[in-house]
Image 1 (cartoon, rainbow, N blue to C red):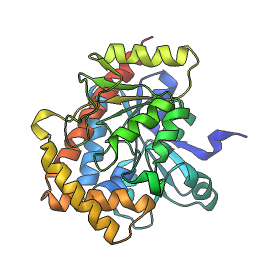
Image 2 (tube, one colour; image 1 turned 180 degrees about the horizontal axis):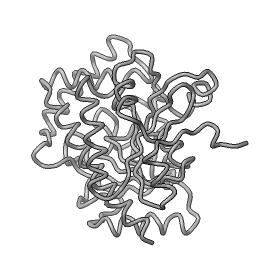
Image 3 (tube, helix red, strand yellow; image 1 turned 135 degrees about the vertical axis):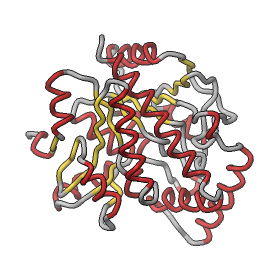
Image 4 (tube, rainbow, N blue to C red; image 1 turned 90 degrees about the vertical axis):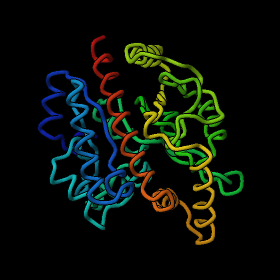
Length: 305
């Protein structure tokens, strides 16, 4: 089957591919489900510009009218930000959305799949999904983890979202053989905060070495991703005890309102934003920009080899 019949490249990404220039994939659920308007559009455009300034080409990925779009126009970003009929698309949703000609914003898992189909190896996001608190009874585990186990895309993030069970998330990744690397940190960052009680597998302090590690893993034929965790900038980090207290409150509300599955994360992020009086949104924007910067630096060095 011709996979390319499902894929539409933006002019910018097509040119970068033809010329062998570095490309960084970006997800789109942050636009449609992760941030309010107009912060979602402003952040998406600012992140793309950061990647260009670092010498790479941004490729924001989404499903529009049943096609995988690798790279979006400003109008398409506005469409994702303002439309109410954008599905949250993970691995299981892709065949249905493409077959029905629907619209979808790609999660970490779906973005990894689409990036791999397009030959893009480096992907910047905010935070990955993981093992949810209480998963020992609910079995609520993000598809992001299984994708990291199987798909050859390196993911730059600010750690796992602190609404999750971070310890179990790391155990799952260890079982699946996914290296968890800290960029200039010995401990796993927890999205809104720079630290957590959990150590990373390896600390690496340079984008050049990060690129070399990625190349070495795949050069050995070891399939699956690498998780590169990049702490939120110090000035935007929230106090660990403060944000954990807020998250506990939001989790109680979600349980009370019987919110499950793919609705949990958007609900919790929205409540955390309200309960922190908008501080979490400012932090979220800062960490996404920070991750885009590092991903671009890795991509530029990755393609030099």
